[in-house]
Length: 118
Image: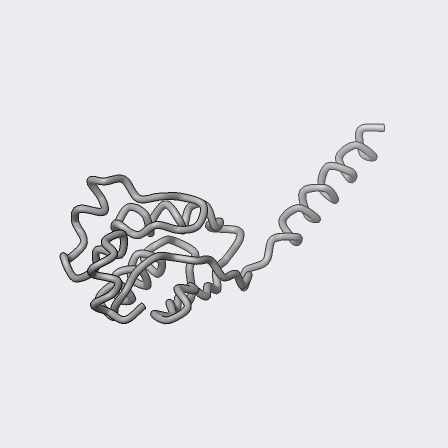
């Protein structure tokens, strides 16, 4: 009986580890307006353990990610992004974090957005 339980436990653990994708792909919306924003957003993403690729599109505000689900998840990646002052669709940056972005990157300011032509 003990052998059967051990075999079942090993199988369940094996399946749960196998189910996680080491090259998961996802896209999330991140607010920003310029190439400085792009650099900051991509760097914050890449610095998150488990993120292999991060490319943010200035025009669409879409961040395309490749990451290891065994090491991180989308919530953790988003927390890294909001920590450097950029809002995602699900999480908003604090006023303190937003205040650290360069004045030309103030995407919440309509005048700045208009100046960038977005």
